[in-house]
Length: 297
Image (cartoon, rainbow, N blue to C red; front, side, top):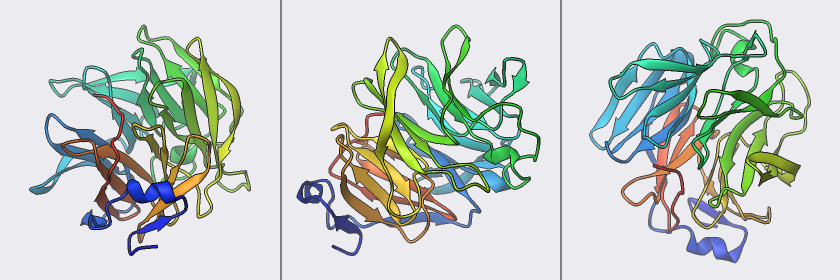
């Protein structure tokens, strides 16, 4: 073990750089979430959900990107590079156009309002996948307290605008990620507020564009999984109570990046997609790795 890493599999020693420390880039937030890297603009966007704002970090410092943000949580980019956001306040998924206008993409299913879209990714075919737990309507802290009209589900929004519930047997689906080749989907289940639900990461095989063969892939040993991302070798990097855990494609723990706050989410970025940005409770951190992320663009 070093000051910043724990090695659980000898191969993990080649994933980290022992002279590249975990750095705190900014602090003063209430619950930082949803980091997304814009390589063409050399900036990172992330949410401070309770303070109803999206922030922009660059090497020059921190600025406000959008406030109010409708209590935005998770973000990603579509294949055209536009910002896709989950908003608790409007219980919707939106797209920010290049001219700055915001286009609602999904806010109802079967005639009922969504709960509080949480995290979002875009598949190789351009479909938008998002989780819809109840965290944003369970209290007024991260949105507006409201009755829950739908189960907590995972949805697929195809490019034509058709919305489909594709996973309906999880307690509270949260972070999600595709494997580099798109043949496997990972979804974190963090459990319902006020319940003793199992907390784990599940894996699904993709068949004809839909998830099948769901099974428990890994259980975090400190805290629980929230945001997750894959690297180019297919390892899954997960948020946890003690930092970020790196999990091999077969489900065993490779190692940990230790962070002094509970980690909510993460994403790869930087000039070579080798810099891991980490949102952790009140702060934003980063660390340079000897691995690269696979998110597009």
